[in-house]
View 1: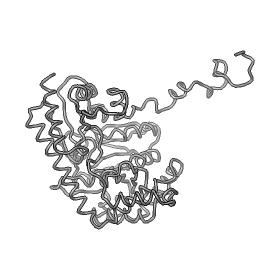
View 2: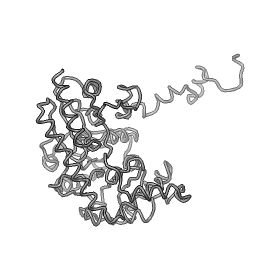
View 3: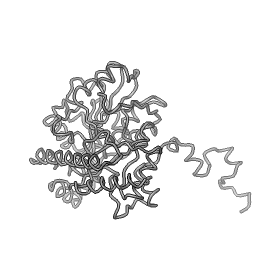
View 4: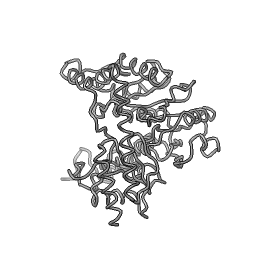
Length: 416
């Protein structure tokens, strides 16, 4: 084409005059997302298999997806909502009022939470809830202290919001309270601290004294605490689950993010929530309205049916015992096999294993998938110190599959 066209072009001259007229790849490089890692679960599958499809003979212990179905009342309600014209409509931005009431009642009765409906914001999953909190509370390059190993999506969200991940590496046999009292971890006024309890990826469950300590220390520092309680229902049976919302004064400097994805097994319905002071939620609501307006109505109605189901408590206790049994079976199978992988911690949906090889966990995970047919997550996604670890998601496999996975991992160790 000739050079006399009056329309825009992408030549060097125009780029100098108008820097916004640039090739797409340059625009992407200029954005902060270019420095954030790719979604690791997706990235690993694409590197290994060229797509997100997993070979049938590969055991998928990569992503935390419940192997059990939702309660029948949840499925029936979702079907009815999807078939109703009203099910296709928006709800209130903050969520169905009756669902917010049910969430507050559920936590108050089951976990002794000090919580009211106006302190609940329904979101499209816990990840969105965390991201909105990070966006509201993080300033450019402000350190966000994350208990390490940390949930990789939290790290991604912090960086996308302009914050800087500050790792608090907690050894497996050191209590959080001891580390805080010893001054191992410190934060400044205005900083943010993130704890996942039970932990994703390590499965570690923090007792009441640890949560009391981190709440007290952050309050003393003038820092803000976010506790991700996605796996709260999956403490071992020998421990009493503890929510930070059961502690006096938690509203002053803390927020909770959670979801029904695991407790009700509705990962695809995308229903989570943020619990915080009503004053903070007023600000978070602005972000939700700009992002998605509201969480999907069908999922909200299904979650409401689950929370109001009279058999919920018994059903949750059964799932809790089931998950503990799976963790135990896998841990015992790994130990008995003589496999060189060492279980550093385990609980909830996860087992966190140390590998003995002098290579990054990405390479170990790739070889496990290709040579042994076991797909796991590299610990490198969960902190700069985690290159010697892999995460095994035990929640999405039955006990027979977990025993088979341990056997395959043993054979893999003998072959390298």
